[in-house]
Length: 140
Image 1 (cartoon, rainbow, N blue to C red):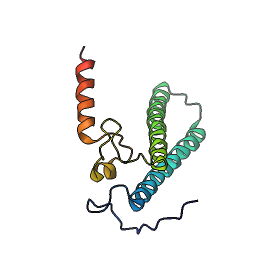
Image 2 (image 1 turned 120 degrees about the vertical axis):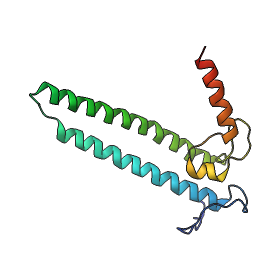
Image 3 (image 1 turned 180 degrees about the horizontal axis):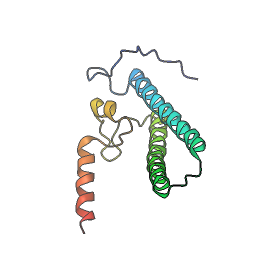
Image 4 (image 1 turned 135 degrees about the horizontal axis):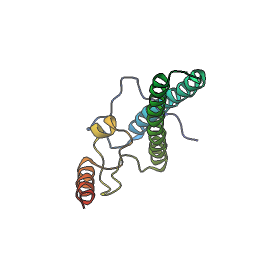
């Protein structure tokens, strides 16, 4: 079992330290776990809210409005479910020692990018190339 790494609350990964050292990995692990717990709590709140709101609304316009709201909420939850899967994947990459490296080039992903989007799997340059290719092929 690994010893727990101390990471102060005000710690931010810096470019002048070794890339993906234990402190940085623990920082991103905690960030991902916190994000995941927030998403899971939101999901539980939605489920409880939908159970509480199940009722028969006689006015057809009000019912349609409520169903539209419910569909939007479910779509949001589905996006969050997919995001939780990406967070789990990032946590797995941390455990396997692959986190922080571009899956296309193998180069390090910038710390600023990882801090902003901790589930990133590609460097900014590789992501831009990927999106350009997608746009070109989508227009076909």
